[in-house]
Amino acid sequence: MSGNPTMTDTPTRSAPSIPEDPRPALLGLRRERLAELLEPLIDKPFRVRQIFDALHHRGVERFDQMTDLSKDLRAALDEGFRVGQPRVVERAPSDDGTVKYLFELEGAPGPGGVAATIEAVAIPDGDRMTFCISSQAGCGLACKFCVTGFWGPGRNLTAGEIVGQVLAIRRDLELPASGFNLVFMGMGEPLMNLPAVRDALDLLTEAVSWRRITVSTAGVAPGIGTMASWPQRPNLALSLHAPDDGRRTALMPINRTYPIAELMDALRRYPLERGRRITIEYILIRGFNDSVADADALARLLGRLRVKVNLIPINPDPVLGEDMVPPDDRQIALFQARLERRGLVATVRRRRGDDVSAACGQLRAFGRDPRGFREGLHPAARVDG
Image (cartoon, rainbow, N blue to C red; front, side):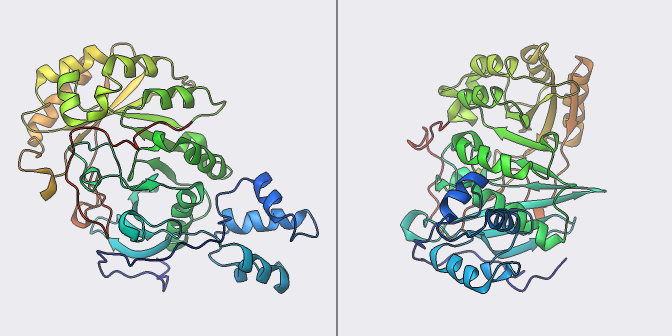
């Protein structure tokens, strides 16, 4: 650990109201857009490359750290622009090595003029490291198993705010620009912020392979179709969690808009290179969707799709209610064995970071009032891109 002095291990549960900085952020801009924006300040074209590399590869937090530029140029950059790096205000290490980060965003405040906040997680697993990053400040989908949805929607993140999470975690853990996995499984629905996610992916894949990146969706079928049209694609994960529309709608209101049959059709159309499979995420809830009969129904549904099933025993949380508890280990093993007997690849996700509320479905948005789960989708729950 680097012991970055801007970080604190003391829990922070609120963020102050801050004015929006009118200066445009440079982090997250594609090279061509950066060149266009900086043209009045740049005397030689290679300066754009220097600035781009400092932002996206070296991960500088301030313009005065760009020491390969003249002092005058650094001052001009600082006067007209900001870097746009999210600020880590809490660092919460787990006993199992997982680290959860609370970020305060520089851009537009969240509800009530309070600084928008997000969480991201670094998860070590042997010699592998995975960053779980967020795409929205909050979430409007109100899935009943997800703590983020209890606080309701906030706003979309910019490409720079997405990339900035990766840069900040890398800096804290003193990691190189590649050699880790990225999963878009933090706060928010990535496919409802697809333009920014796409820009962030294009920037991140300059160092990280597409095969080491997974985008998870609650089931935004048009967004899956858009990703399917890209010349290069990340791994796709679908949060399914029930083998039929009735129970899936009870857990995930978005199923009213994009029911299971439409999602299965979108998965069949998603191009898969050799050796790649779509991940089906299935949260196991005691007495709700964990029977052997449910495993049989899930196997029938997935049919001949090239998928692997990731079984996730639900992580309890006070806001989720008393019924949201995982099955016992024996029932989990029976469910997994039944899927494997039916010819599916099935794994069980180990609980990581739950002692600091960093496990699957436990990320929150701080500095705002809880709204509780709502019956329908928030109007902001739409597809862009």
